[in-house]
Length: 123
Image 1 (spheres, rainbow, N blue to C red):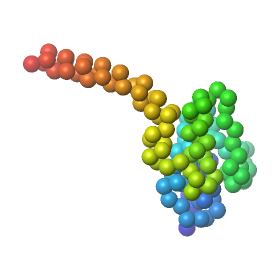
Image 2 (image 1 turned 45 degrees about the horizontal axis):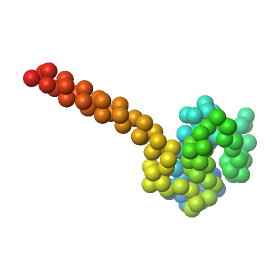
Image 3 (image 1 turned 90 degrees about the vertical axis):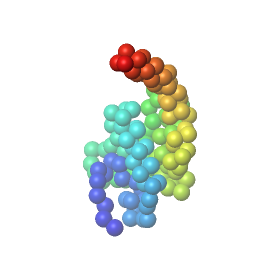
Image 4 (image 1 turned 90 degrees about the horizontal axis):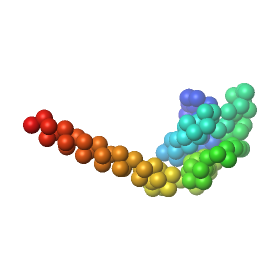
């Protein structure tokens, strides 16, 4: 097994050269979500060695300004135990994403209405 990629997003199981699968991708998703919301990766350190040590220990700090829902999702994605990590279906069903998806539905409905009105004008 060969390791490649950005050290900041590597899962503990890949780091330990253990078998890995979708759970490792979900870990990376947690790292990406954290970075998108904070501007820095969750395990960022001055040296790669320190970053990898932090990943091994599963130590990261969630900012207080994050909503409870996003803190819950990130924590479940960055669970050091791949067998206990949140599943992809549970990510999709998670309140953080559900709330977001519900918040954009009215805009989509307005867009559909606008498109249908444009179609009428084109005829």
